[in-house]
Length: 467
Image 1 (cartoon, rainbow, N blue to C red):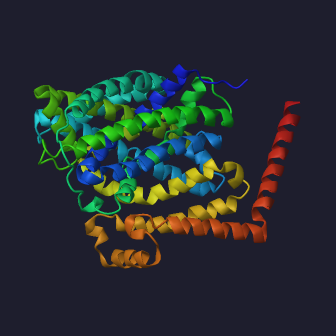
Image 2: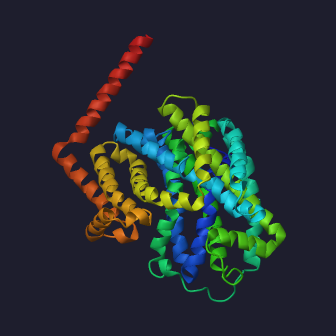
Image 3: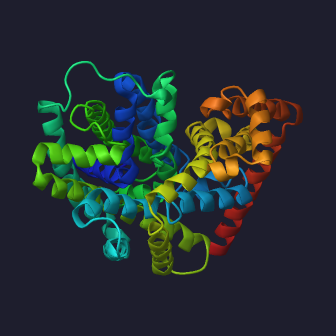
């Protein structure tokens, strides 16, 4: 009989999911959104929740529905080459090239720098200690549910709860909220959707599948259908927790203008609010909140990346974990601003592809017999998303003549391109092209039949060998 998780086990798995996702950007981006959105904070926050909470939960369920242990397994039916390339890009982006270094730099700039001062060797010293602690936990991946689910997440919520109580009981501003900033003056919900990209959680949901599915398996869950149900339940609980924290952070940012008139972003809002409510102790409180949040995400990312790369390429798990931690250490010392500046173009390219891959996974019973449709949808989406990447490049590249010519042409041809959603219509066109191609050639039926024949032949050979 399929194992059904007890409420306590579901809560433990939800705590793991929350802990893995809620890291560096999850603290600073919603607080900054609330600060900038002002009176438009509600639609902006709803848009943010759609991509920062809804997509990650869908990603977890999609992986379970397809019976995949990793994003490579999930995308392999589309193309082995695409699966390998997409998997590497995905894990390197949410791992050692962007997200993992960001966990250390955010910890330092928000929590540590105000205590020790900027400059000098402090960033290097801090990142050495930070990644050393992460390595101790990452080298024992079997204890991940204990490290993150049982210990770090509850500690994080208790610390953050103290700050939220102060913000709710005694808001930093009273009366009408300020007018929204330029970015949120019109289309605040759409802007919030794009802001949710910055958390990288939709990408992380595909990357963390290997960790979360393993954790559910350790609790006795087996089979794609039961796995999808149990992960859906745990994802919903974890998602509700994330949504509640995001909403509180956005509210804190929106009401921060009275007490923090000079705050420039989410990090300043968090640090300033903590000092406003708790005085000198607040500096240590925010340092503890940020450190715990970022450390648990760093551990989860390192485990996920190392497990997948050790399976795809030669080398032990510990070797890959060590390499990724070393690269993260080096990039973290470049500073937070540089990491965010170069990560946004990559996110604008990968996010649309990841969303389409999730939808393919959720509809796997239908798409697995219509792979041409899925392939066309991904191909058309990737082509359009490339222009989103160009538009999001740092000014030194985005303002060059060739890039300007390409992005100008894309803005003319692609609907919603200027608001970051130019990939939607091409994705729909890809589906239609795939449907027509399938109807005319019947390619998927022939391919499915060949795959079934090869699988049957393999099983027969196994039976003969066993006999």
